Amino acid sequence: MCGIVAYLGDKEAQPLLLEGLRRLEYRGYDSSGIAVLNGQGLEMVKKVGRIQNLERALGSHPLHGTLGISHTRWATHGKATDVNAHPHTDASGKLAIVHNGVIENYGILKKKLTDKGYQFRTETDTEVLAFLIGFHFDTLDAETDNRLEMAVMEALREVTGTYGLVAIHEAQPDVMVGARRGSPLVLGIGPHEHFLASDVSAMAAHTQTVAHLRDFDVVTVDRTGYRLKSLSQNKTGLEISQIDYQAGEAKMGDFPHYMLKEIFEQPLSIQNAVRGRLNLEESTAQLGGLNLSPQELRDIDRIVITGCGTAMYSGMVGEYIIESLAHVPVEVEWASEFRLRNSPLDRRTLVLAVSQSGETEDTLGALREAHRKGHRVLGICNNVASSLARETDGGVYMYAGPEISVASTKAFTSPTVIFVLLGLLLGRMRFLSATQGREIIGAIEALPDQITHVLRQSEHIRQIAKKYQQARSMLFFGRQMQYGIALEGALKMKEITYIHAEGYPTAELKHGPIALIDEQTPSVFLCTQDGVYDKNINNLQQIKARKGPVIAVATEGDEEILQHADDVIYIPAAPDYTAPILSVVPLQLFAYHMAVILGRDVDKPRNLAKSVTVP
Image 1: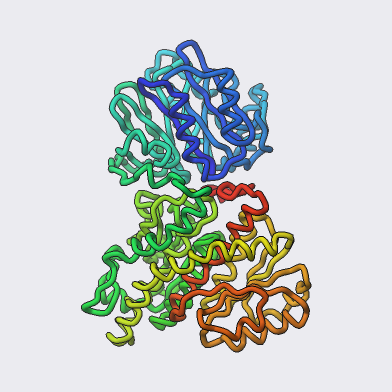
Image 2: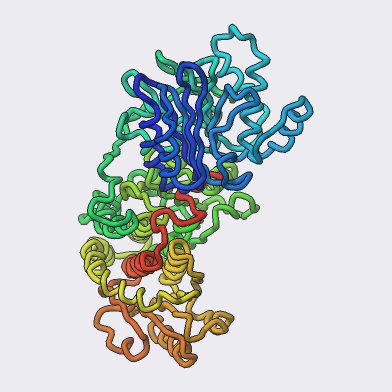
């Protein structure tokens, strides 16, 4: 959500800033802008809509200079307009900032500045912050060497809320100041140049030496290097690391969209998630990153999984998997609710926080709430250098590779297979035999080839999508481990096609959803050969009795389903604990093909952001 790219070096800033913004498009945005110090003053161009609009404007009015800031905005305060787009300037027009996050007390600060005679031009909280920094800058002695740094720090001491920001000023044309609290900001270090960005992908093509700012850090960058200060009482230092990021991994290649590419990458991402984590000799999983001894793992009486969106639905599947394999009670909580409610957690509760980016604000809030209550928190994420990875007590990385499309696919199947690994590990400590452990390992190892088999049906699934392209609403039904898949399938459909879609437990059909059944409303049934197959068939027949069209995801070899469903997508036979990982893939393809047929912007659906870094 929102993206920051800033550059100070010996190259022209504009091309590098635009390139960085394009790499951050996946985060979701509705406007963009660039400000550059050109040696004579501050120049700025801002445009609503896609980055192409900004590029066209810069084509007729290029910005020259080697220090600049840029931003992609996702509107929070104020509509998506050219005026409300970032960067924002102070009252003098000489200071500019870009900002991610929310200034919660901006109303109070705005009144304070209005009372001093300041007049605002926009509806945004960021402009209030720019004016506040400008106010403090103007009160400092003009001869002060670190004037911009001091002004930023003084302003932020008055701020309540979250921020990742970068500020520049005409009076200090060789300085940029960055600060972070609750919204990620990364310093990129290169020879004779530095970057500040909200995501390493924005600068990975130019430097792989980075340092992630911690909350309350303030970094000042000039032509000679950088220095770090902190707004907190804790002494801090930047931890320099090398990122393992191949720019080629984030390119579409021969695929028309990132989403399709990432769907087809799932055999590899599953392999990466389990590589080195299966112990054939002991018929179990090995997850060294948990930082828990065997005795500590044995002492776990309860697990709470928390996340948002796709991560949450993966956790709902994980709940059934872990309880089935390990007989450990599991609950799943929306991170946005967990962080605010007074949920009773007993002493031996383990919290699992799931987030692809590791920067989801609500999930980080849940993590911190669990820590405040003295609980051990483990993370499952895809970003090794993320806030979640740094703040948890241990965890498991997905190793899914870059996921650019806003609609997550790899980031659903990868954590789900990690839940199978965790269920295997805990189960072998409790009651699973070595023979059962080997069977589970065999099922896990079969997944990549089985997913490849499902992917070969892409054209068949496209034809089904074409058949139902006029639908305005869809229902998704699943039971037990497949219930979370129904929710995820509905989420994918609504995210990228804008068709209304809802997921339900199959047995809840007659408790409300059956009122929605008609000839124009397709129902997608997850009807694999499991212990509730006959019950699912019964519910399916009730829909057919009311002339509702049915698309079934079924197990290969099931001939009976052909008598009941209008269309069938088959998946290979698999145990209950891996079947959901297979059955979600056809739903991903179904949503993708439907979106393409309807002409939607598949990788950047309206109003959505990849990483929700503001609550």
